[in-house]
Length: 188
Image (cartoon, rainbow, N blue to C red; front, side, top):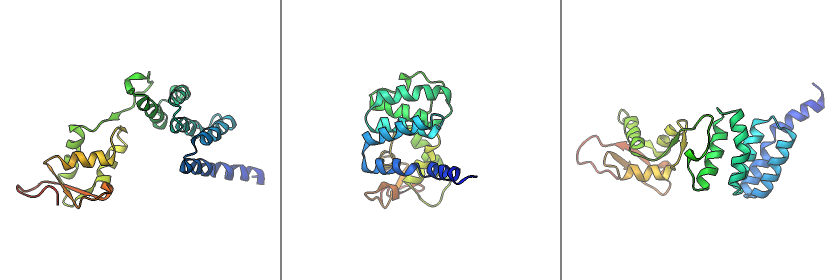
Protein backbone atom coordinates (compact mmCIF):
# COMPACT_ATOMS: atom_id res chain seq x y z
CA UNK A 1 0.00 0.00 0.00
CA UNK A 2 1.40 3.38 -0.96
CA UNK A 3 1.52 6.25 1.57
CA UNK A 4 -1.16 8.10 -0.39
CA UNK A 5 -3.52 5.11 -0.23
CA UNK A 6 -2.97 4.88 3.51
CA UNK A 7 -3.67 8.62 3.92
CA UNK A 8 -6.91 8.25 1.92
CA UNK A 9 -8.07 5.44 4.24
CA UNK A 10 -7.15 7.57 7.25
CA UNK A 11 -9.06 10.54 5.83
CA UNK A 12 -12.14 8.36 5.31
CA UNK A 13 -11.88 7.12 8.88
CA UNK A 14 -11.74 10.70 10.17
CA UNK A 15 -14.68 11.90 8.02
CA UNK A 16 -17.06 11.73 10.96
CA UNK A 17 -15.25 14.49 12.89
CA UNK A 18 -16.34 17.52 10.81
CA UNK A 19 -19.85 16.06 10.63
CA UNK A 20 -19.99 15.66 14.42
CA UNK A 21 -18.52 19.12 15.05
CA UNK A 22 -21.07 20.81 12.80
CA UNK A 23 -23.91 18.97 14.52
CA UNK A 24 -22.53 19.94 17.93
CA UNK A 25 -22.38 23.60 16.82
CA UNK A 26 -25.87 23.25 15.32
CA UNK A 27 -24.50 24.81 12.13
CA UNK A 28 -26.90 22.95 9.89
CA UNK A 29 -26.44 25.04 6.72
CA UNK A 30 -22.70 24.28 6.84
CA UNK A 31 -23.50 20.66 7.63
CA UNK A 32 -25.61 20.42 4.47
CA UNK A 33 -22.83 21.95 2.36
CA UNK A 34 -20.27 19.57 3.90
CA UNK A 35 -22.48 16.52 3.29
CA UNK A 36 -23.33 17.57 -0.26
CA UNK A 37 -19.61 17.79 -0.99
CA UNK A 38 -19.05 14.32 0.51
CA UNK A 39 -21.81 12.84 -1.67
CA UNK A 40 -20.27 14.48 -4.75
CA UNK A 41 -16.88 12.98 -3.86
CA UNK A 42 -18.22 9.56 -2.94
CA UNK A 43 -21.53 8.96 -4.67
CA UNK A 44 -21.44 5.25 -3.78
CA UNK A 45 -20.87 5.83 -0.05
CA UNK A 46 -24.04 4.76 1.76
CA UNK A 47 -23.08 6.66 4.91
CA UNK A 48 -22.50 9.87 2.96
CA UNK A 49 -26.00 9.54 1.51
CA UNK A 50 -27.54 8.98 4.93
CA UNK A 51 -25.59 11.89 6.42
CA UNK A 52 -26.84 14.25 3.71
CA UNK A 53 -30.45 13.16 4.21
CA UNK A 54 -30.05 13.61 7.95
CA UNK A 55 -28.43 17.04 7.41
CA UNK A 56 -31.42 18.13 5.31
CA UNK A 57 -33.77 17.12 8.14
CA UNK A 58 -31.70 18.95 10.76
CA UNK A 59 -31.68 22.03 8.51
CA UNK A 60 -35.47 21.93 8.19
CA UNK A 61 -35.37 20.93 4.51
CA UNK A 62 -37.85 18.12 4.95
CA UNK A 63 -39.15 17.87 1.39
CA UNK A 64 -35.59 17.90 0.08
CA UNK A 65 -34.69 15.12 2.53
CA UNK A 66 -37.58 12.98 1.30
CA UNK A 67 -36.77 13.63 -2.37
CA UNK A 68 -33.09 12.83 -1.87
CA UNK A 69 -33.61 9.72 0.25
CA UNK A 70 -36.44 8.32 -1.91
CA UNK A 71 -34.09 7.16 -4.66
CA UNK A 72 -31.65 5.74 -2.16
CA UNK A 73 -34.44 3.96 -0.29
CA UNK A 74 -35.58 2.35 -3.54
CA UNK A 75 -32.05 1.13 -4.28
CA UNK A 76 -31.44 -0.04 -0.69
CA UNK A 77 -34.87 -0.60 0.93
CA UNK A 78 -33.41 -2.67 3.79
CA UNK A 79 -31.36 0.23 5.19
CA UNK A 80 -33.26 1.37 8.25
CA UNK A 81 -31.33 4.64 8.53
CA UNK A 82 -32.70 5.69 5.14
CA UNK A 83 -36.21 4.82 6.27
CA UNK A 84 -35.74 6.79 9.50
CA UNK A 85 -34.58 9.94 7.68
CA UNK A 86 -37.72 9.76 5.54
CA UNK A 87 -39.85 9.19 8.63
CA UNK A 88 -38.22 12.11 10.47
CA UNK A 89 -39.03 14.35 7.52
CA UNK A 90 -42.59 13.05 7.13
CA UNK A 91 -43.41 13.54 10.80
CA UNK A 92 -41.83 17.01 10.78
CA UNK A 93 -44.18 17.89 7.90
CA UNK A 94 -47.17 16.68 9.94
CA UNK A 95 -47.56 13.53 7.87
CA UNK A 96 -47.22 9.89 8.83
CA UNK A 97 -45.68 6.71 7.49
CA UNK A 98 -48.63 6.09 5.17
CA UNK A 99 -47.81 9.25 3.21
CA UNK A 100 -44.85 7.66 1.43
CA UNK A 101 -44.61 4.91 -1.17
CA UNK A 102 -42.28 2.46 0.60
CA UNK A 103 -40.46 -0.45 -1.01
CA UNK A 104 -40.16 -1.91 2.51
CA UNK A 105 -42.40 -0.17 5.00
CA UNK A 106 -40.72 0.42 8.37
CA UNK A 107 -42.25 -0.52 11.68
CA UNK A 108 -43.38 2.57 13.60
CA UNK A 109 -43.99 2.11 17.32
CA UNK A 110 -46.31 4.48 19.13
CA UNK A 111 -46.72 4.57 22.89
CA UNK A 112 -49.72 2.35 23.45
CA UNK A 113 -51.16 -0.29 25.70
CA UNK A 114 -49.12 -2.85 23.73
CA UNK A 115 -45.89 -1.05 24.70
CA UNK A 116 -46.92 -0.91 28.37
CA UNK A 117 -47.90 -4.60 28.21
CA UNK A 118 -44.50 -5.46 26.70
CA UNK A 119 -42.79 -3.57 29.56
CA UNK A 120 -44.88 -5.51 32.06
CA UNK A 121 -44.02 -8.85 30.44
CA UNK A 122 -40.33 -7.89 30.38
CA UNK A 123 -40.31 -6.88 34.06
CA UNK A 124 -42.60 -9.58 35.46
CA UNK A 125 -39.95 -12.32 35.79
CA UNK A 126 -37.29 -9.88 37.03
CA UNK A 127 -36.57 -9.39 40.72
CA UNK A 128 -34.52 -6.23 40.42
CA UNK A 129 -36.02 -3.02 39.06
CA UNK A 130 -34.83 -1.86 35.65
CA UNK A 131 -34.20 1.68 34.51
CA UNK A 132 -36.57 3.40 32.13
CA UNK A 133 -33.60 3.49 29.73
CA UNK A 134 -33.33 -0.32 29.88
CA UNK A 135 -37.00 -0.61 29.00
CA UNK A 136 -36.74 1.95 26.21
CA UNK A 137 -33.77 0.13 24.67
CA UNK A 138 -35.90 -3.00 24.40
CA UNK A 139 -37.90 -1.23 21.69
CA UNK A 140 -35.10 0.54 19.78
CA UNK A 141 -34.29 -2.43 17.56
CA UNK A 142 -37.96 -3.19 16.95
CA UNK A 143 -38.78 -0.08 14.96
CA UNK A 144 -38.94 3.69 14.69
CA UNK A 145 -40.01 5.01 18.09
CA UNK A 146 -42.54 7.81 18.25
CA UNK A 147 -42.04 8.21 21.97
CA UNK A 148 -39.17 9.24 24.23
CA UNK A 149 -37.85 7.79 27.47
CA UNK A 150 -39.74 10.58 29.24
CA UNK A 151 -42.98 9.57 27.51
CA UNK A 152 -42.42 5.95 28.55
CA UNK A 153 -41.70 7.01 32.13
CA UNK A 154 -44.94 9.02 32.28
CA UNK A 155 -46.98 6.15 30.87
CA UNK A 156 -45.55 3.64 33.35
CA UNK A 157 -45.84 6.01 36.32
CA UNK A 158 -49.60 6.27 35.75
CA UNK A 159 -50.13 2.54 35.13
CA UNK A 160 -51.16 0.73 38.34
CA UNK A 161 -49.16 -2.37 37.39
CA UNK A 162 -45.81 -0.61 37.84
CA UNK A 163 -43.77 0.70 40.75
CA UNK A 164 -41.62 3.70 39.93
CA UNK A 165 -38.69 3.82 42.36
CA UNK A 166 -36.51 6.83 43.08
CA UNK A 167 -38.14 9.11 40.52
CA UNK A 168 -35.81 11.92 39.55
CA UNK A 169 -35.56 14.68 36.98
CA UNK A 170 -33.62 12.37 34.68
CA UNK A 171 -36.01 9.51 33.94
CA UNK A 172 -33.08 7.71 32.33
CA UNK A 173 -32.03 6.61 35.83
CA UNK A 174 -35.47 6.13 37.37
CA UNK A 175 -36.12 2.46 38.10
CA UNK A 176 -39.30 0.54 37.42
CA UNK A 177 -40.59 -2.80 38.62
CA UNK A 178 -43.98 -4.49 38.66
CA UNK A 179 -46.43 -4.62 41.54
CA UNK A 180 -46.09 -7.97 43.26
CA UNK A 181 -48.12 -7.47 46.45
CA UNK A 182 -51.32 -5.58 46.98
CA UNK A 183 -51.03 -2.36 48.91
CA UNK A 184 -47.46 -1.53 47.94
CA UNK A 185 -46.86 2.08 46.99
CA UNK A 186 -46.43 2.56 43.27
CA UNK A 187 -44.11 5.55 43.56
CA UNK A 188 -41.43 5.36 46.27
